[in-house]
Amino acid sequence: MAVRQGRFRRSVDRRGGGSTIAPQPTLLVRKDVWAGLLLAAFGVAGLALGADLPLGSAGRMGPGYFPRGLSFVLIVFGAIVALRALAPGSEAVERMRLRPLLGIVAGGVAFAWLIDEGGILLASVAAIAGGGLADRESRWGEVAVLAVISAGFCAAVFVWALRLPIPLWFR
Image (tube, rainbow, N blue to C red; front, side, top):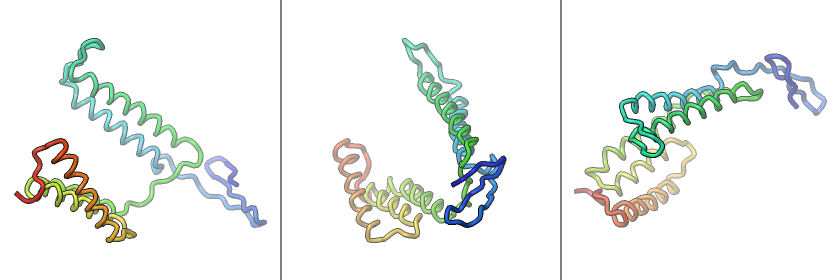
C-alpha cells in the first residue's frame, strides 16, 4: 500500500512491520519525460527537414502535407507522454546497459554492410545474430532457428514475391 506525502511516497508493510519512505524520482530522471522529449524531437526534426516542401491544400496535397501533419502529431503525443511523468508512481530511468545497445547496433550495421555483397540471406542472419548478442539469456539454438526462418521469409517476400533487385546470396 502506498500513501503519498508531499515529494515522498510512504510504503506500508501490511504484515505488521513499519513503513518506509522512498523519495519520488525527480522530473528529469523519469522515463516518460525522456520518451516524450524524444517523440517531440522527432516531430521538430520532421518540421525542420520538411520546411522546404510545398504544403498544398487539403484538396490538393503537396509533398509536405503528410510529413508536416505527422510531425505535429508526434509533437502532441510527445507532450502527452511527457505530462504523464507528473503522475505519481512514474518510473525512473534505469542505468544504460551497453550490451543491448551494441548488439542491436551491430546487427543493423552488419545487415547494411552485407545486403549488397552478401545477399539477403546472410544479411538477415547477421541482423538476427546481432539481436541475439543483445540479451545474455539468448539461447543460440533458438537464435539459429529464428535466423533461418527469418532469412527464408525475407527471401520469399523480397526476392521472389516482390522481385526486388536484392541478391539472394553472394554476387
